[in-house]
Length: 378
Image (cartoon, rainbow, N blue to C red; front, side, top):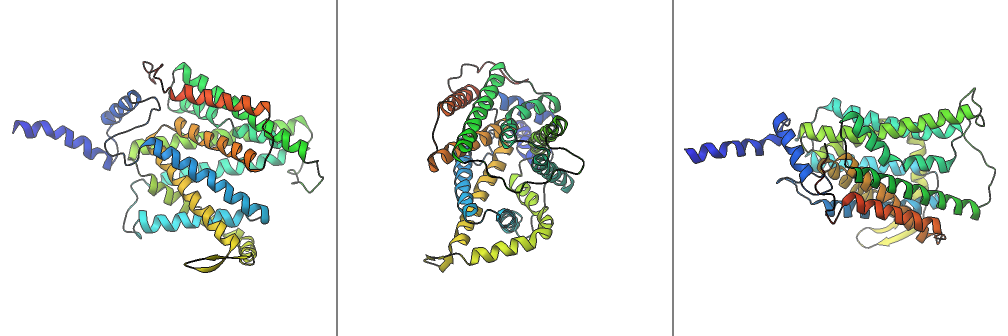
């Protein structure tokens, strides 16, 4: 009887993740996760994949996805709607069959939470693209995208009242500056190789002058809002998994199913590019016979996108949003380096400096030697 009563609390702790996290267990989990390792990832007994494997699959899926996307856009630059719709449709169908078991599995997280998540994602995406109408130069646009680590650090301090050791702030600064330097260098190389060509540009909103400082300032404000919204989305996901448990694959399914009706106005363009894809040269594929080359590339793009985004979602349920943002930022940097090599662009001194800063910042953040192990997150 005594042995049975002593085992009762342990059983209750193991059953807690099925529903909402009890407040006392959530605090204990947060303290334990901060003491384990230097990535601040929650590695409990029900973790199904280790963190290094997830990070490797994120890099593999996301970087290879960029290659297939580049091959498609080289032939038909306007096929973005078809590619995006195919990705969302595939992930939604895959989740409905394997995650939700054709509707037999119920969502563990309320639908209203997913609606908020989709609105944050949609709002950040729309604002990011809309800012280009206000005379924002493309290099500045790319530099703002590189500031996601700083934005996430700021939102974590404001929303979660989370403060990090000093070496984390220094690491974020080094990675951000390194990516900005590499981005500017790549943009300068492209501008030097390709002469400026006058072409049709998007018309600015009525009543605005793209050349005025006020218009540029408004565009910067929109970009800043988009950056903070994207950072808030990462914080929101972290809190969601903390409060309701780890259900990243359900979140992946629902967040790709809810936006599907938004593609209805784009169906004519999607159908047009589907016809163009069908007219591409056939490639012999043993089990299926001859398949149009562009459809084969689109299939590879969709599969690698699923691998990329599903692993990112798995990472969000096991690590803090700052760690996830760091991994995604490093993935973008790896894609940048790959594009430099793939297109035989010169790797100038500014690229070397940027790469060195990114490497130094990553090592400082991960702290592989345990030099800052005594410091913990408040």
